Structure formats: structure tokens, C-alpha cells
Image (cartoon, rainbow over all chains, first blue to last red; front, side, top):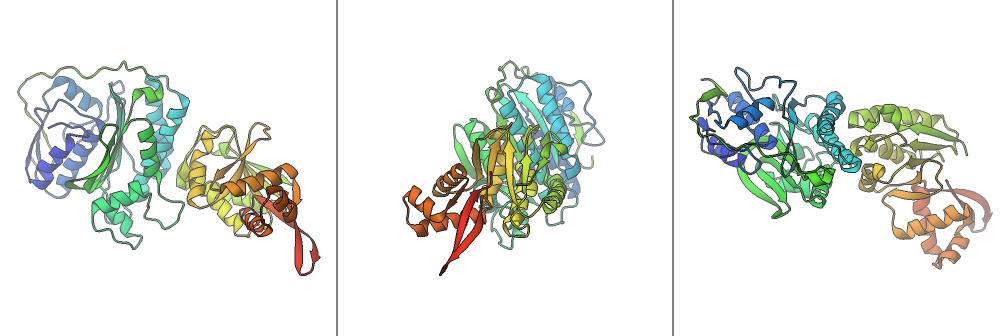
Length: 291
Length: 184
């Protein structure tokens, strides 16, 4: 079990499909912002639904340190303000209203630019992506008005293979959002296909939508990875396997990850992976719901 | 031609969200309204680092949609940009709306290109009109080597999109004679 784009599905399956009330993360050694955001949303969702979930923390010290630097998570809440000095590129950040988005985008960009000298063209393209992806949360995550707390969050980190940007919410998801067009979609996979691959939006206005399709095209040209999850469907594209839609364990909202290779930004690949894991006994670290 | 410049940089170097764009559109339309009937609004992207598609759609594409609906008379709008890359988001949104605009290169460039969606034959016709500044359908059909009907169809689309202007120059029964002129 890992807290990564590829590994988080097992976590979700164990809790959401198999109904496990204890999530044992003691053997986890790898994590990325996508896995991190989904873990936070999972814990919150279980809490919202009144479901008990005990999480046994990872024991690998560098990973624990990184999780804390990213702002995840100490009792009693899931998240505490990240320390000012941290090796997290951009800790978990809430996205709540549209007015604050440009400042958030600037903050993400500054964090990346503080660490690296970036080529302008990909840097500005990433900023455009962030503007569109971040504003999707206030614009779409509670389109039907039925989500009590869509809880939009974003985070970013750099790894040996590239920069990972993740944006996630536990709102109404793509299928319900698209239903506002008056054209019901039977499955989450259909809705995901319509939005990501056909550029549809919940608005009939022809100027709306197609941003995820544009992002996909750019990610393809960069040889990057794109994961978009909604409900029980996951679109996953990477340079090796191409893109496809998969059935996954149901989870509310929309969660997105972009992996952009360093060379796209003109970054030399100097950032190392986290250290090798330590085999120490895990301990109960926190509970998402009641203890 | 009475020209007015609308600087997008007044809203920041990086723009932006739909709500920001909506507010900016109100300002743009106010200026457009204040122009004389044949006035032109130049939307200047100089000083901008990032123009997000959402902002561009709200400010520029939606305003162009209103303009071509005829509510602003013969007024025209063009974009002025230091780079092609900067207009990518705008071009995507115009394409989604089946619209097109003339974009001139800044600073003080004479070069122009189309942002948005315009078929190649229409671009070819537009080039000729922009080169000649003023011309008639007959002259264009001859120069392009196409039948008059085909030329009329192209001109109709270009006028509809406010990429050129047409002036009535006389009546030769049973037809009205028009002259077509560049907006540059």
C-alpha cells in the first residue's frame, strides 16, 4: 500500500469498498501530493459519514517528516499549519473561493520559482493550468448545491521524475455536475470521458469546458502523467501506457494529479528521492473519526 | 478611424479567473459603447505574462459575441499581443465559440494573424483585403480566381465576424454595390 497516484487506489478500495475500519499505513514508504490529498479527503469523508476509521501511521521517518512538512497531519485536526521552513514544495492548501485563486496560484508559482530557475513558457503554461484547475473547485465542486463541504485542497511537490501538482475535492463529482445540462450520464466513466476527452462542461455555453482536454494534450506533449478521478472512474495517462479510463472504488468529488517532467521546466534533475525506509514498529498516530 | 486602447495589464500581469473576467468585461463594454459608430477597440496584451482561457473568454470572446450580434453598430475589436503564445487561451475560446479576431503584433508591428477559428479560404480573402485596404467583390473574385458567389460567401462571413467592414457605395439595379475595407 502506497500513498501515490498508483497506490492510493488500494487505500480507497480497502476503506470504501471493503469497509475496513483500520487503515494500516505502517508499511507505506512512498507518497505524493495526489495520495496525500486523497488520504485527507478519505478521512474527512469517513468522519462526515459517521464511519469509524483508525489510521496506523507510516513508520518510515523521512516519510513522516515529509507528511508533516506537507501539513498532514496531527491531532486533533487532520492538518496543522505547515512550518515556515519546510522541504515541502507546496503544502496542502485549501481552495475555498474564487477571489483568492490568483493569490494562491502566485504562491504555488513562487514556491517553484524559489527552488528552481524555470523557463518562462512552461512556467506560464503551468500557471494557466493552475488558474483553470483551482477555479474548478468554487465553480463546479458544489454545482448542485448538495455537498455540505466540498473541501477543495491542492498541494505540490517535486520528485526525481518531475513536479507533481494535485488538486482535489470531495464535492458532487463530474456526473452530478454534468446532469445540470439536462443530459444524464449513466456512469462516472461516461461523465469523465465526456469532460476530459470530449471537452464537455455542465454549461451549455460553448465557451465553457475543454480545459482538461487542453491540459491532457499539453501533458502528452510533455511526456507527463495525468490522473483524473471522479466517483468510480479514473482516467490515467502516462507516456508508457497512454490514456484510459478504469473502474475504481467509489469516492465523491474530483481529484486530479499532473506529473510534469523536470526537463519541461529546464530543471536539472538534482532533487533526490527520500531516503530508504526504516523498519520500525508502527503506532496508532491518529484517528480520522472517533478513537 | 477612432481607436481606443484597452489595456488588459490594468488587471494584473497574470489574469485570471472567470469572475475577474466578468468584472473586466463590464469596463470593456463601457469603453466600446463610448466609441463612435465606426470606432475600434484595441485590446492590448502588452505587459501580460499569463492570459488564462477563462478570463479571455469572459472579457474578449463574450464581448466579441455581443459585437457581432450588431448591438455596437459598426465598431470593431482587434487584439494586440507581443507573442503568439500569450493568445493561446484566447484562441482556444474563440475557436470554441466559432469566432475569430485579428491580432496585431506589438510593439508597432504591421504583422497580423488570426486568433480563433477561420477557414483558410477566408484567411486568404482577408489577406487580400488587408493588403488592398479597400476593394470590391468583383475585384476580389478576379484576384482570387473564384466564382462571384463563392467570393460573396467569404465576404459575408468576414463581415459577420467584423474582420472587415462593408460600405454601400451605390445601387446598380437590381443589386446594391458594396465596397469592403480592412479594419487595420
